[in-house]
Length: 171
Image 1 (cartoon, one colour):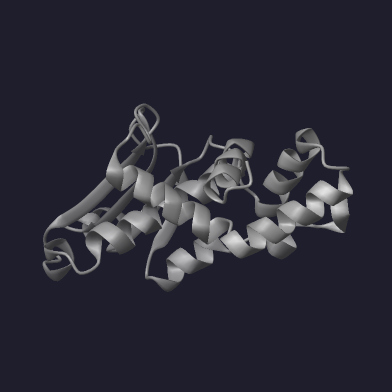
Image 2 (cartoon, rainbow, N blue to C red):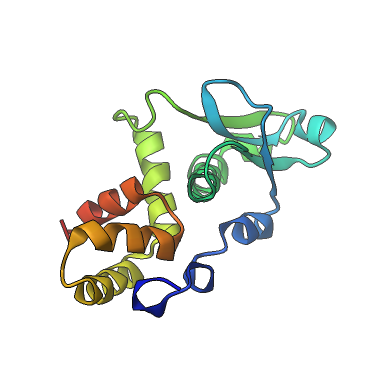
């Protein structure tokens, strides 16, 4: 149990299940390029290489909270950059997008958009604002305790909570 009596697994969004509903196989593995923490592959030789035509990979040594964000982020790329595009209409063409360690979110519109999608999926604004109010009250309005509590509740990294606070106008 955590502050406010919350158990994180009862409230977190089942992002892997959602990706699977879109036809993805989700893998957590070590063998991805050194500069990447996640990848998405759709079409092309993906089925031949992985036995499935749509996959999302998160790096195994990333913590669970970051793996969840990677999966949601890559799903955002699929929905906003692949679905309806010429890539989707031609399954012989490969759609691939790496979630890299460096330069991630450095003003790249597609990356920023996928991050915002992931944040909204994992921390829906209305629920986030309500949870923030409840947690802040329970920790006597001390953000030093609220941020880690919200990170556990939503199963995301603390830096994602800080960013979401800014996005929702709470910071």
